[in-house]
Length: 326
Ligand code: BYC
Image 1 (spheres, rainbow, N blue to C red):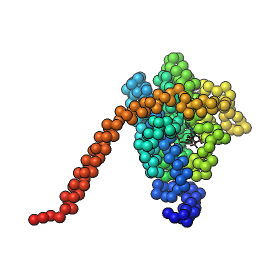
Image 2 (image 1 turned 180 degrees about the vertical axis):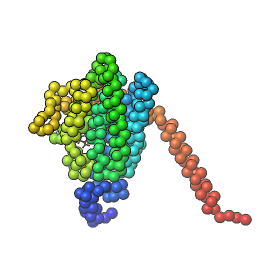
Image 3 (image 1 turned 120 degrees about the vertical axis):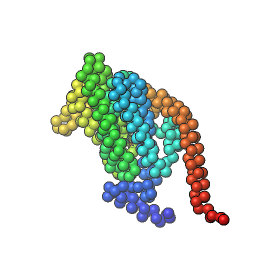
């Protein structure tokens, strides 16, 4: 590319965005667009992988074979989401091993929500209901994101997240129809996860450095506050049907706005968690690092196998193309 090509390429890129068409891996894109996409996709992939830990904590203690099978499937889905997303980041030139190194060195972020502990089995249900519910609210619009591989990964991820949300809600309905102790567990889990779920949508719009540019580039169709409000409006009736109280005294229907008003989010807590000082940050990253270290032999074996297969492939190719003598 010469310096004179760049304005033409830039114009083509902007036109693609304006037509709401997709940017594909081989297309020219501004360096800052590429960097933003890698940042968002990597953070999202890391969130899926770290997000396996809080629920994984309950697999061995699931109360029945059915619950165990559901939870195993959900946690495996999250690993799968991480893989699609690392794959999407690779189409932008990112190196997956490098992204993992950045995660375990705490040089890249993952969602704040996974830095809270899962103290009872009701947390599994509440994570499905609230955390996956928030994830769907945030990610369905990303199916229209301007970067093709990310948008396509998001379609499949959202289908699976819907199943995750439903299994959580169904588990909570079952617990709410059980004993008083079970109902108390659900209420306690709701109290602990409500505010952190609202934080998943990111900082308020006036403190979100990336929103404006990401919206202009079609990466993000909505602002953080718009989606947070949408989530509250969607979740309040679900809480009513479930019979739990959301821990916000200021939560009430605003007739004029046609939406729910809600109390202020504790942004100091959010900033502390995002900067590494949440209740479980150190544990989550240490666990990820240990799993990575313990998996070194698998990566070595896979590479050795790939090299051997490649060698055999070359040898077969040499034999079939070699001239016959005699
Ligand atoms: N936690 O300018 P902003 C899941 C960062 S996985 C930590 O508003 P942006 C699931 C932000 O990245 C859920 N960091 O940023 C998995 C930025 O970082 P830099 C994950 C946060 O990108 C397993 C800085 O703060 N979902 O659902 O325009 C089991 C300033 O923010 C958070 C995704 O990743 C946070 N909550 O908007 C169950 C969805 N919020 O620039 C469920 C894709 C913000 O300092 N991502 N930050 O490096 C997005 O939609 C957007 O990136 C965000 C943030 C809305 C999250």
